[in-house]
Picture 1 (cartoon, rainbow, N blue to C red):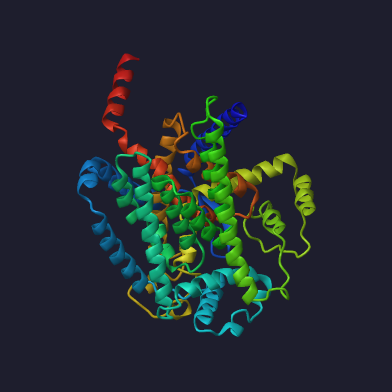
Picture 2: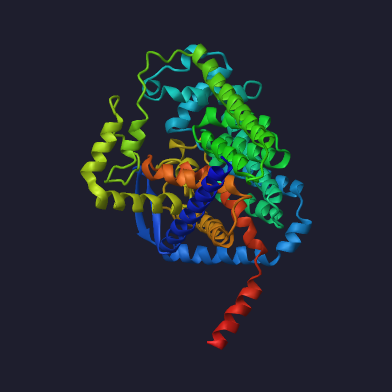
Length: 490
């Protein structure tokens, strides 16, 4: 049994490590020249990097260089309290200056939450939207519970998002410390100004709370080895989004593979089995229990559900290489997906996957330009609660301000991605970080065939930051010295 487990651990480590190394390196190199973009007719496309991107990129790189240069000072002197005050201030300025109204799915989540919190339950699922997407009632109830004792205002949702965002940043830094990285406060500092996180505070959906609960759960497990609280919070995350299962399985494999040797006693093996069993039981009870409570109070039986195979069928459409094309069907089956794969053949499928992988992992903004600033309009009142000195510059993606913001977000992401890629090659043994690798590679593999959206990798921000944290321990001066020395020898 131990032999099989050792072999399985070595195999999964090898696959996870090398898939991420090779694919992400290629994606990064291509991404320096070819920029994935989101069009506001809700479609993806590519374009070459422009002068604005280069100029903004240089500014971001210079800022990063000085952060690296003064990393010891930041680590020694920057306090979490200062970071909280700073993040709160810039978040409040953003929320006030960009008063985006909820739209699309967010509008219905917001309205259902208000109705839930004010006991207007008969109005919660009224309207055509719920006939197609009735499962979003779970999100509506979640937000409704959160605001139950709070002011029933739009700004309340955004402040809660701000707190979730800060929690993600704080616990990511604490996780870096638990993974024995020296410069965990430098990552904290970097994430405080990571603009997609701030801009997502306008997005009333599942991303912020989901990532918060996943990050909190990982920290509790890593710091305290508390599988009970870990399973509780991952169960809540799973209630919000199915990706929670990926985190659970990644940690379960990490527990099973930890310290596996031929000398493991039966007692140690039974202890691991008991741990895994408890985790699965708590996880299922929490997320299934929460779903059951909602289902008992809101009858969705009259609403026909779209089969999950729609997301996989859409995920391999050729025209938009997996982006949402609204080709839904109530009769979609696995056979439809298989038929499409057979119709396209290996060459066309390979082209779809290549475009899809590059777009997903190099789009760089998590589509924050849509979720933070709304759809393209020509006037403030169409999408903002009120006008500010900023709103007139944020109406559509053709405006210079929006282009600069988008470029800034993407260049920040590229720096974070580059830090991760460096450490993917630097890390030879991943046994102490298996769960991080497993979540990222599982996300990568699933999204090859699933519907494409760059926000679907939003939960990877803390994981990429944790891996990238080790890059601050590399000595660039020694690297430059070795390059010069080798060039003289040659």
